[in-house]
Length: 123
Image 1 (cartoon, helix red, strand yellow):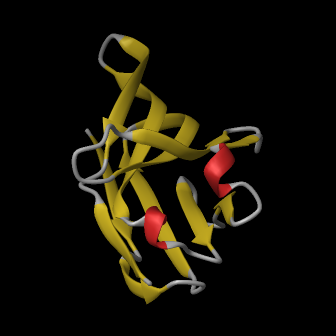
Image 2 (cartoon, helix red, strand yellow):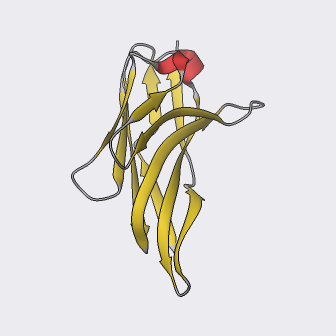
């Protein structure tokens, strides 16, 4: 019903930059919050950054000042610009969409995850 397509991961040296993209499509009435999470091996999945439908943003302390989340011109597309990358940023990055969808029963709020994209930062 709702699909999330992520792109932009890869291998970069410490101090470098990457930009992740998340495109949400399907029967979306409203994208309430779109977030990026990350999960390193053996670790829990943690919130990195989030942006609301109104444009409010929230960041993990570890990425403040280095990462920027923004909405694209294409509806329901979100970017995560990652600068000054550190080896500890290495993880699989997942897009999460908290959306209101149109169903036969009316509007309902649901959450969806993308497939994840690997970000590796070498020292």
